[in-house]
Image (tube, rainbow, N blue to C red; front, side, top):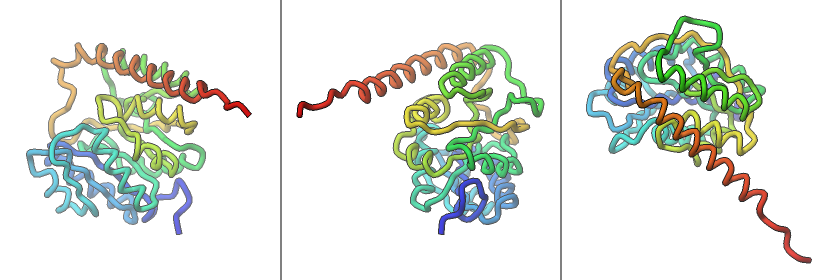
Length: 253
């Protein structure tokens, strides 16, 4: 029997996409197992060249899936959502670098009672996590756009700390984009097209506990441009989908 949405149980899958995170992934797995002992922890090793997979297994991950080459967070998350779908479970996405506190997962799951996707938000009044420069500008702009799209206040739409209810698992296990920001921004556009309800909960996030950040200072200058490109492409996709749905003409009797 499937558990009710929003309840951490054996029907909850915690998905941890990981790329070269041998220093931190073990601690993340152990923290999640401590907080949610009945949950199924699925680590998706996204083509790592280090000991990420073996560290995850040693730490007690229930399932470790290895992709043959680095495909991006969206692809890894989609694999994890497929596993959750096959298990008939709700799901939580959690980073492998230790930024997402395992003790906040319960708060995300609780919100699934009234939503399909719950975003753990860094910039919602709790914690002292800060981002500066072009990344901060891009994040604020994206959040404003997505807040209008979903008609609710969203302050951190690039957060990779999320809970997914049954409808979201079903949809995004099939349609999760693999490209840059596809797992965050475009996934929210797809959710909107499907009529899914999105909300957020404030989370005090930590700095990464090991490894190397994917957004280095030298790349921050191009972050804003890339993000705006994603917004335009996602908007075009959104409009095209609406056009296909509304363009069909009724047949003649």
